[in-house]
Length: 201
Image (cartoon, rainbow, N blue to C red):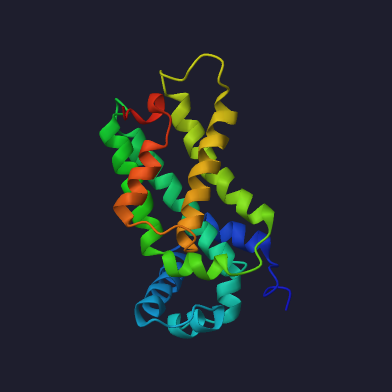
């Protein structure tokens, strides 16, 4: 029972860093099950996911503490991947910023049903802030390479401010509090960034 209540943190931490093909296959199977359930319009739950993926509940909980942990893992991976792609642009151009925002919205759109299901759970303030921190860490890295950072602005504080605003907008979109088409959301996320960071004038 301890596993289903979020135990086995050391096992999950080890598996999270593992490149073992069996671990990769299990995680891929779980994610494939999520997308299959979403495509079918079925309710997302751990029971439905393990049944569709053909894995045991114990196996699921060895990888994720619950639906919220699965969603958080997806978001962290997406934030990091998008940040790496943005960093690959040597000039940090406005086009690279727009592309990164498009990728961000596409990720949230592709996983909207999962994120909406998690948003309906009684998620703690700490879980929400953990996602903001994950986004802020990637933004902080980008700001460290940003020659246009205005004098007097502290990098960590600036990154946290930008991440808090962006993640708040994404969360409101996921939960349906804000009704925007994907392209409109990209436009808001891009144009609301400080121009010295986004390159958008």
